[in-house]
Image: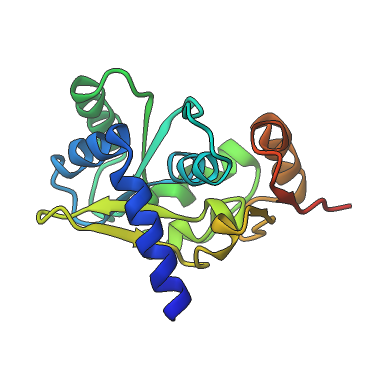
Length: 193
């Protein structure tokens, strides 16, 4: 418990040090969603850049805002994306309601998944354990951390396959396509045969 609290504090400090991520969190908070976070690559990249001593941040391909609202219609994601793009047009926003993932996962990835039950349930399924992390910003400017598998892999620069939804081939393709080893050479990347 003590270790996870220290890592959460470290993560919160890194988030506060990023003007861009803090602005993105403020924009996301303004949507008034009940259960949400910015996660995956935005958080992972921030931490790995810091641990590698990169003075220039790695450009983000997108910023993933995920939320959980079982009553929201499917078109809500696009509406929220449009609001975020208007607020921060410099970022490529991707908004996903975790309550609806099971409805399109088969079409997109060829695998059926059970409905997710919460935001944390959704974050827990992302392809690498180090990526299963999200941050949020409450009304009092406190940074919340969602890390269903903990923060150890993220801060230990360890990349391991999370089999919850992504198969081994997807994991391998992601590691290669995202150029993890080239961008962050100190990573220990699990290779699966």
